Image (cartoon, rainbow, N blue to C red; front, side, top):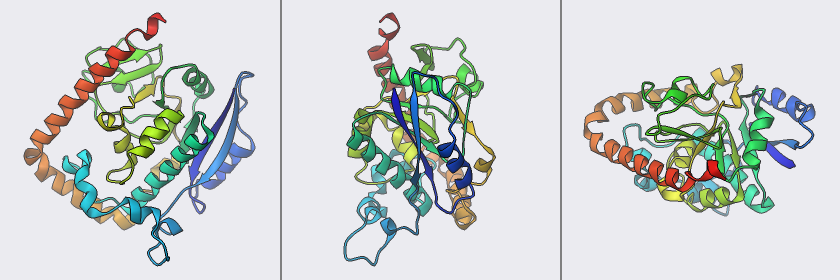
Length: 293
């Protein structure tokens, strides 16, 4: 089975060398998988996509404006704020890869450039290809889960363990559906069906792209996470290409506002929690016959 794996990497990034090394000398794959690693040049704030002096409007001009932010659940919740240019570039990069997936009309894998492939990486790809799922995170951040209620999250996705079905359910042995949000766009598997849904509902970029992927009520693509996680971070992750010294003061301002917002946005947060639970039950009911197939 052939599968394209795109590594999103800034041209001038210190991470670029490791990405090129993987492309030129990828890890040996099993005989039934033919992975093709390629670098996708990430879109940054210095690119033509951000230009304001061209004779035509650009992607970012079409996609982002402050007055559109109220469309976003994330913006209305505790942590909401205007997006950083780095976040817009990240969203645009993933958006372009969704369009590529639609164009090719076949599944693909997206990796951000601070990845560390685990020993079960290729196994996870084969499992994804054989599954009925359209979007599967290969890495996930579980910070929103309650450890005492979410056993897989409590182990940072490292092990398959018995779960509390009110919070987490494993489908087909490895694919976790959860009632809490799992964040990150660091590594994921994507089908054309999911790509079409994501692109269709990205007319406006109104939240970080990983938060958009969690808007299941909007695009109707359930978010699953492969367990054990088949991608982790390499040491380059410690130096973020999105959260930079240039926007650190804005981030600190957001954290201060978040503390003040907790009470005023409590109802909004509770409403979002209730909706997540409802969609968790909805998709669980849809998938409940999978293990018997």
